[in-house]
Image (tube, rainbow, N blue to C red; front, top):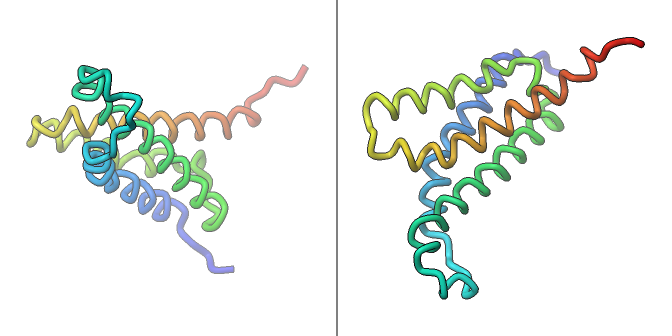
Length: 132
């Protein structure tokens, strides 16, 4: 088996997750609307694209972390800092230079960060269980 630098691969997967924020935002805006929601134009106008963006960010981040663990043997809890750093950097850059896209990017970034931190915490919990 090839010896890989796990910090570098965690950073690469973090860049992949951060790079999908633009795609997820455009996907959420262009997502088709189900006929059930046609009776609620207020919901469609204000919430539908945001919910689609957040849900797709949740799913895509989960799939990327699954691929990261299964096929590349890189655990999300080993180098959480390097996994989360590109997303946090992307949010900071959007906050400093482009406030117009910040809110829409946060609809994709927060679910992704929640998934990354939850998986990292859940995998570390068995290590810290108290012996009774």
